[in-house]
Image (cartoon, rainbow, N blue to C red; front, side):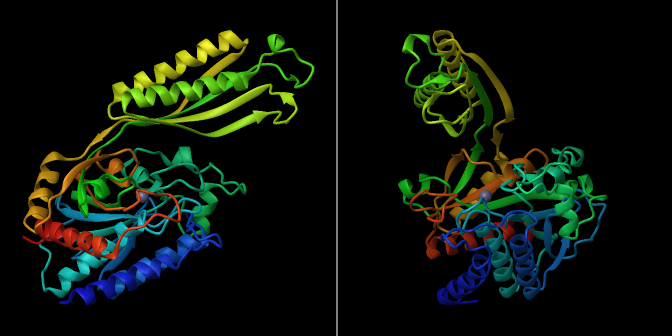
Length: 416
Ligand SMILES: [Zn+2]
């Protein structure tokens, strides 16, 4: 594949094939785990891999592995496989690039090396992780965390989607044996490195004027559920002094979270609220709200949460409310492998790139893998920074720089 036009055509054909799957009438993309759209995306992956002579298999966590080189070669040799990849699923009404760009780039990068006549000295795998977004069952990083054992199948199989279908039933419907479902420590143990390319979900690269960057770290993040209970009453006849209005407590808490986030250079979001009885002419009895907070270090996240808690307590006292704050999840920060990232940095500089190191406040399969395997990430510029939205985009030229960078990385790690 010599000319730039050939590379552009190959990208548009490969990326376009996946982007045709799961189109919403509203313009977005919805490929939830183990649905017909997910199955179609998996079939697309198998075809694209086969076209490049790669052998596809599915692991015991439902992830797909396209192998360049012998998948079973020297099964006893620990730490020898180089894996790249990302995920095929999307959030509801998401964009075309999140996850998809990493899988497409992995396939194209291996394809370019094959066309150049480069051979792998160690097995290379392009991995399509299952259910990264958790859009159907509410469990993000499903495939990567089950694979490494960070998530136990016993906790998962009974979880249901909005239609009452359980994870176990969904797996069986997708042709996966729920019996054998679980971690694969031997497979993880064979990995020498994992590199995930991903569209950037912010504007770091756009501001720097660069097409690609390396990830430095993933921010610690968490989700908490706040329940404030007061007293339902008439919106007209109840004197202000007599009210126990939980909405006032929530308002104070949301503003406190925002102020603390600003102070700490963190982010805090209340994006989901339930109001009881949810009546326009009643003082509410109860409000439940979910705080999503992320910060550069664990201590900043602790401080943000402490400020939120203090505001909740204060507002509950002033408004006669009872307050309950429950942690639903908390993920520690991830430092990507320094030696691997330095090696990638040198490799990209040799190609004339000047990759910055950017932290990310989003979750990625690479974060789950990093606990067990030397892991690094490459970001491709997103001109608007918009993600989890149909407006998410990346220029083809930047995507081609990403494919070239990933090919160079695979060559460096697996072909020398
Ligand atoms: Zn993603």
